[in-house]
Length: 82
Image (cartoon, rainbow, N blue to C red):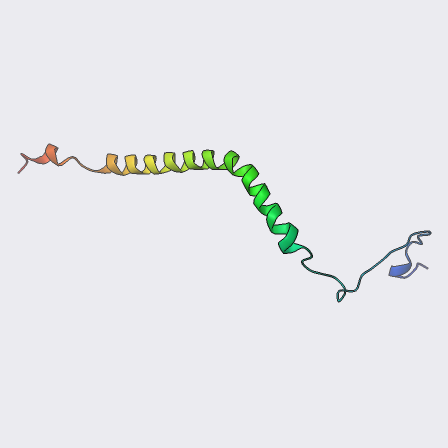
């Protein structure tokens, strides 16, 4: 009553190619083209990304330091207590 799973549709004029895993190269041109491309892209975007990140880090550390100082008690307020 129905076709088998592999015979559900017939495709005409479709050519498929495949390459054996033993013939593939996993990292072609990795060192000659890949690493220089990574360095070029890093240089192109570092000045766009680094300043906001540095500003955020400095703001975060300043806020934490200020918060820790505001939690401390002032010893001058308690000199005459006994």
